[in-house]
Length: 109
Image (cartoon, rainbow, N blue to C red; front, side, top):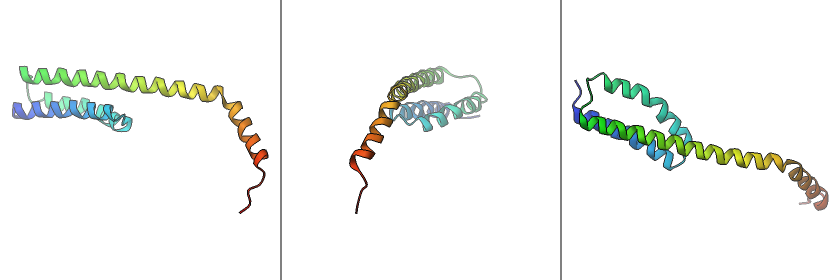
């Protein structure tokens, strides 16, 4: 059976990893951490009931997971907004690029 302090430390580490990835906006790493979370929690749960300290750490993991998910959602909305803006201005960008090509003429070295 795993040492309860070890299990507590592992829970803290899981929560810290989620928080760190979200803080850095490292969405690839956050995805990896989120995918690894369920198997890690299942493995830890196999060592018996959670004690009070572990339950507190588990709640912290849940809170950090929720915060990370919220940060990812905010970033996704911002990206979607930027993509919508780019789509809306696509014709203008193309016209600008075409005008720039004809205005500058050929480039000679």
